[in-house]
Amino acid sequence: MTRRIIPRSLPDALKNFDLLPDSAYVQQAIVEGLFDCSASTVWRMVRRGELPVPHKITERSVRWQVGELRRARKG
Image 1 (cartoon, rainbow, N blue to C red):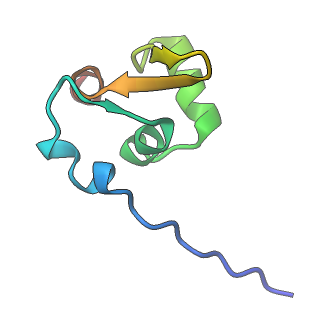
Image 2 (tube, rainbow, N blue to C red):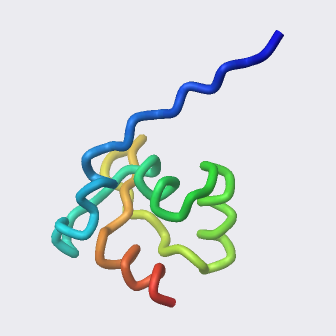
C-alpha cells in the first residue's frame, strides 16, 4: 500500500515573514519552515548556537523573535 503525503498549508506568518516587524514573535512551526527542518533539528540548532534561544511567553509556550531569526539566517 502506498502512503500518500498531504502537504501542510503554508502558514501566513511564513508566507509574510519578510513583512513582519523584528519585534514580532513566531511559533516553532514557522522556524521549521524557515530553516526547512524538523522540530528536533530546530532544538539541535538551538543547542549548537545556530539558532537563538526562544523566549518563554507562558509556562507552556515559547516563541522566537523575528529579528533574531533574521540575523541567524544571515549568519
